[in-house]
Image (cartoon, rainbow, N blue to C red; front, top):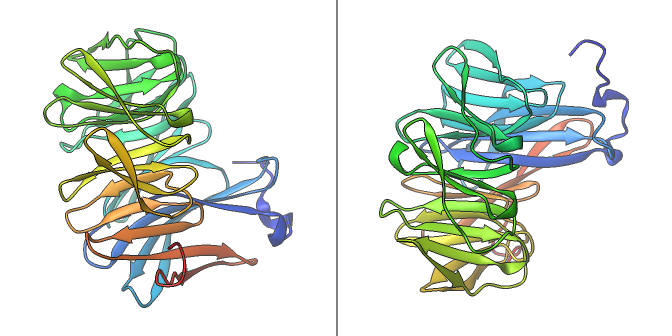
Amino acid sequence: MTGRKTVDGVPSQDLYLEVMRGFHLGGTLFGVSIELSDEYRERGRSYLLLVDFTGRSARFHVLLQLENQMLSHISSSQDDHVLLEVGGLTHFLRGSSHSTARAPEPFFHKLFRLPDGALFTYGEDGCVCRFDGISWQPIQPLISSFLRAMHGPSAELLHVAGNNGTLLHLQGDRWRQVPLDFNRSIEAIHVSPNATVSIGCEDGFCFEYRNNVLKEIKAPDSDFMSICDFKGARFWGDNDFGVFVQDNHVLKEFRALGFAYAMQPSPDLLVVTGWKEIFLFDGNSWSGFEFGYDGQLYIQVIDMNTRYL
């Protein structure tokens, strides 16, 4: 962006590094997004990386560098990536092609892609847009709410959730509000093929909604940021302990990662986004890699036998 301050003038010890999302692309390859920013988030730089991680070694290649803060990212394959930066500009990387499309106002902050490839962005004032292959097309809002999470295994089961207990179900081109008996902000949702909606909120409030019945899930007093199914189990991630596994309507500690902001499954791996780390679980054992910045971005392998136990 012309005239925008960059992170180049900020001492490396004063820069904050955060991993945004990670996706397993098959084999040893991963798509990972990273943001650098100063203390006041006035300066930012974002990277989209293709990481090659063997378990014993890790290296990366920069696919895209932005002198701005990145809000959301999806990698579907090593040749297909979508990024949303501050200001609503979306970047599409397909092979050697790089195109952009700007989302309409108001502010959008996250992306979600259905298994069939349909792409959505969502954010403030209950606003959601669907990408038609050329531009973003708004879906008429139903309620003015800050939307924080979207999930669905199919277009018929797509839900979005946000502040004040807002849960909306997309039916065709219209939203239907799902009535919930609470007004807490929803941070994470997961929709199963049987239409069960798992709901994660702040302060340990977690629920399961199915057939018009809301059941509470017993959980510790922390903020739940992510929910994911992997190899027959349902995992929940919070901002304090790490990863929990659901046992009936109770969440039990599974792995102390400290922070599990986002989780994304592939057939072979559960990818957990921490603070500066990407953690990987294959159903039996954990591995991972982490990033740092000392004037240059670097990557190193995490020894999961001595850390995050």
